[in-house]
Image (cartoon, rainbow, N blue to C red; front, top):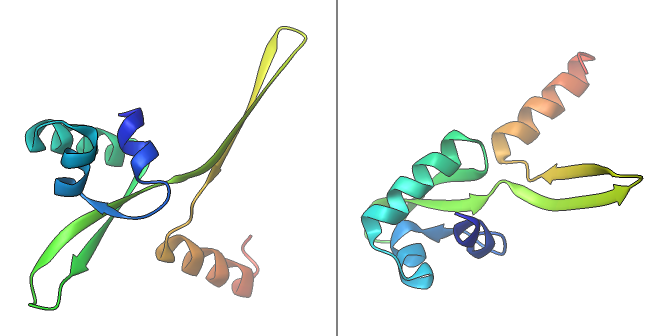
Length: 99
């Protein structure tokens, strides 16, 4: 699963592309994608091509992970990538003063 996240940090990829780059069967990749989307680690988006066909593309929801070990404890900071809906909700809450 970490390999799928690594290959979706720089750009969106389809499940078929991911199956090729991670050298796994499409069914295996789809199962892993389902888990990653369910856990909120992968963003799924519908993509349309020029012929009018549609398919899903995936991008890592994690933008950056920072870990610091100090005095025997681990401080972990995860910066998430926002999708369009998240940005809109945040903007709307800022406008309304709900934040």
